[in-house]
Structure formats: structure tokens, C-alpha cells
Length: 141
Image 1 (cartoon, helix red, strand yellow):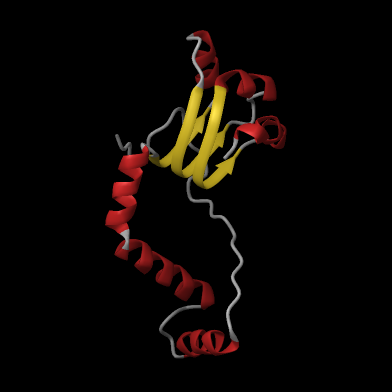
Image 2 (image 1 turned 60 degrees about the vertical axis):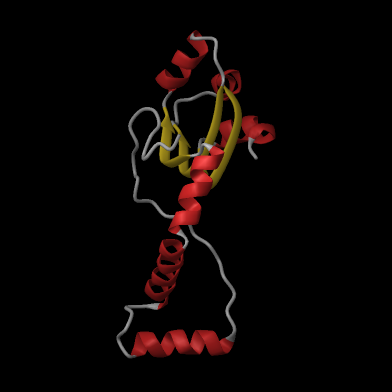
């Protein structure tokens, strides 16, 4: 089952980005600078983002099939303290599998996270208070 933009609670700052570092050879970098200089792109980042989006669009069907096969949540999931308390009250544990963004609210304690989260697999970004990340370190794959 594939959920689009599923999850629990409200999500703040959906548009935040993650920084990555890439190494390029001087010829590739020169060609990028030439395209920027000629006005095809506003800057290097604009070209790189466009190239990445084009590749993701090209492989969209493979991603869709893989997400369905692995039963990943596609998009974002945000867990609040209330969400995790409800999981605890139900005597359940979460196995979080997502492609996109998983975030845990700032008011979630490490103890509550440990009591309610069995495992976390995120292809993308995982945001949580540093104490919660440290507590869950052995459960994050």
C-alpha cells in the first residue's frame, strides 16, 4: 500500500531542504558555469537540481514500483507526542518505513520514542531532537 503525504499530526517547515556535497571534475564544472553564464540556469544549484529532477522523473516508474513493493510511505510523516502516546496506550510499536521525510516533534522524550518506535528506515531525511536520535540510534537503519 502506498500512502501519499501520509503520517500523523501536523507538519511544519515542509519545504526545508537537505544539503549534499558532490565532487565534479573541472570540465563538468566549466560546462555548468558556461550554461549559467549563457543564462540557461540562474546558478550552479539550479542546473544541478534540474538535472536531478529530470533523472527522478525518468525513473519515476521504478521508484513507484519499489515503494509499493517495500510498503514505504511516500512523502512525509510527522509524529507528535500525542501520536506516540496514543500508540503507547494501544500497546503497539511503530515500524516506520518511508521515502521522503520523517520527523518527530521537539516535545517527544527519548523514553517515549523508545517505548513506541521499534524501527526506522528512511530513504530521505529523518529529523528529531538530538536526544531522541541518540536514543533510537540502534533502531535506525
